[in-house]
Length: 268
Image 1: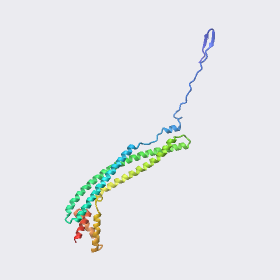
Image 2: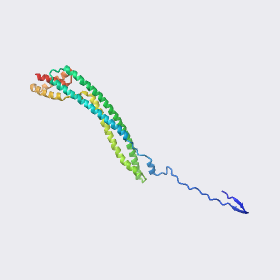
Image 3: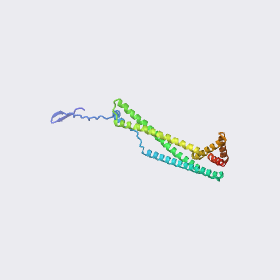
Image 4: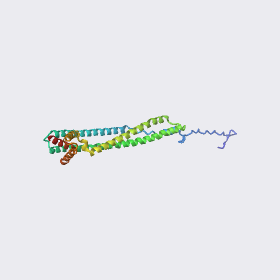
């Protein structure tokens, strides 16, 4: 700025130039100037709250187990009814096949109820299976992300860059826990899948699941001994054929046909 001339009391003087005081510039930190440690801190560790998910899965597991136990109880009840019915058919000479068949029809109705129960348990199992799938997917994503974060911190540390030690320690603790939780969830998924297949087989073979066979096996062994003593080994195929023939002709299970032949054999 040019100097000004001032006339004062006959004297000519020059105005002194006022010193220009420049403001002190403070160095501004740009994004590029941020420390690597601060930048790393901005990336969050992925850690999903599990309380609600755990509660829902736990309730679904209890629901499945309760329903499955109730189903097994119904199956055992039918087996008990079959056992008592077979004993009664063996011990009562006047109990006809016609009466027996009417009683067995009632047990067949109970078997249909069991099949409905099986379908309900399968639905519960499939719901739980879906929850395991969702949990596995989330844990897998969480695990890979945190593994990458941990490996990144280790790489930066090897390069001599500043890192967050607390974050590294937390990741070192968390990653193994996620691996265990992932394996645990995978195991539960396989277990529920196996249970679903078990229930399907039960439904397809409902009579075999609910039948009582011990008495028939015992009586057949007794008859086999008797006919072998009377006619030799060649009598066994004939005994089996006779049992099969009666079962088919009368429309009754093989266990009851065995009891029928046993009763006839004792009369001889």
